[in-house]
Length: 288
Image 1 (cartoon, helix red, strand yellow):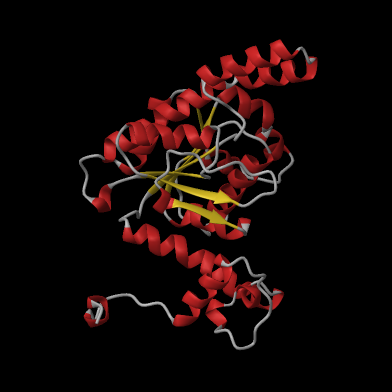
Image 2 (image 1 turned 90 degrees about the vertical axis):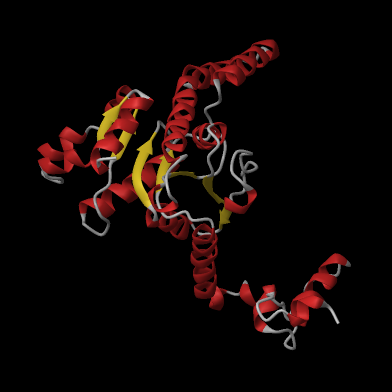
């Protein structure tokens, strides 16, 4: 008898799951099967009527795994997936110029112009990990990003280079890139639903640092600002990194002039241009 069967705490999978795996490994198409146990039946779980179950699974899986790794407090970093490191940007521009296409060259030069944000996000991730290195688990802060390239990779990379763990909450998209290599596999999650992913960003967030980005970054930023403004979430530091970028993009004074937000709402976020300043704001907020 296998010793595992004598261990009362040993996890066991139903025979149905083993049968399903064998079916898949043989390359057989998965078709509806009324006799298959419901929890081991992907065809059933992907029906429109079981969407609520999928919501629950996307809520539970990352939550339970982060609990298991002692991750309760995060600093969430958002920003463009397109920015590259200064080193990679030099190569990118050189390759574009060698190709001779004017549009490709222009795009590469624009991205290279913003490579310093990658390096600053990397430095910020390192600061957070260094602070947490000798803290008990309940006092640690962990970098959490969308798990992809660009600014996300930079923050995860900084934490990794300082010897810290970090979290990646990726989203499955048609044009998706592979998860960045600086998130441990056990903390690299993938979501189908944007709503559940954004919920996970906020569930453990003690601060939000938003680097320059596009529509996705704006969506994530305004989700958090709205939650804090409406008191659906507790106040947290919301830091907009890159003051010239954000002040050109967001005419918040106009919103006050038109009466659609109150003057106090402008205090919901702060502008910074330096990784240490961003970290100091978070430390001051929590008296760390």
